[in-house]
Length: 333
Ligand code: TYM
Image (cartoon, rainbow, N blue to C red; front, top):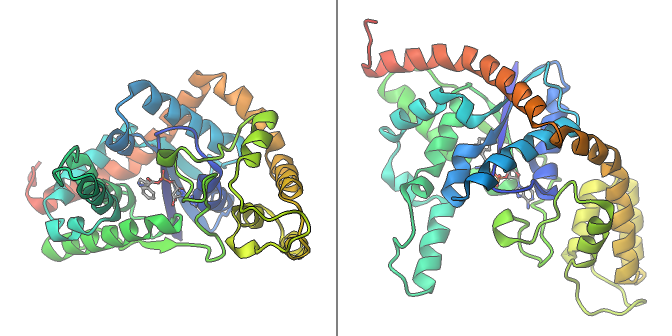
């Protein structure tokens, strides 16, 4: 059976990029009996970027409520918060001791932080923590702790999954073949969605469309998507337009073909955005109501997460024991 696993970092409200890149394919997998799936709120990863305790905790609840509202099948999947499974942190240390520094030097997130420092004439190490440096090692622990072989993520995470594969391979080579080598699973038609300003949609750029914005706010936010200055009636290029890109991620192929035609016929931006709002709102309206009910009951969410963590630990604890024995920690216990 394929083992599918994916996580979302708890640094704010989940957005429609997270939805198309990870949540939608994850929910599909959770309803597929031929797969075993694992979904988690990455709160340990959140500490890398966010030092507001409230944001981290509330975000873990908001992301959990989002999965639940959108219909994750928790009977057929393991649904937990990363920090509720301490074996992940223990494994992370052991992996830190086999991961090559040279490999981590090449990680996008770390390199981007160094480049930003250099651009502002700062010390290249300024404000760079060991957390950001070993982010891919923690992500490797997340994945191989459950011997997941398929990792559905957006294209921005491909490198990290490849690093997990590399690190797992090194462990297996040095010690014992305990880990499955994971691979990314990407629906090639799913793009990295752009945000309101045309850059990648990301919580760190403050350019996102949160999944469960209220109707009015959703309409307003969609109206803020940056467009070029073409007037109504002037043909518009769908393939360079954020409005069209988001449309395509939510629409059926027929609806997309129709919208492409409208762009070529010079639909007004206001009209295109109004149609985009109707499309997204139609899809998210019902789950949004469920979401409101779920977030109002944090104890209910905690209960679901606790029982998920128990299921997760039934699997992680025995594997961690094997790992510890393999490296010489309490081998005769
Ligand atoms: P994060 O929290 O940045 O994003 C969560 C998921 O959403 C996808 N995604 C996008 N997809 C399309 N368009 C976008 N604009 C967009 N922005 C984000 C991401 O590719 C990701 O699939 N380190 C990971 C979380 C993580 C993880 C893991 C994932 C921790 N451990 C183990 C998989 C397996 C992260 O920061 O994702």
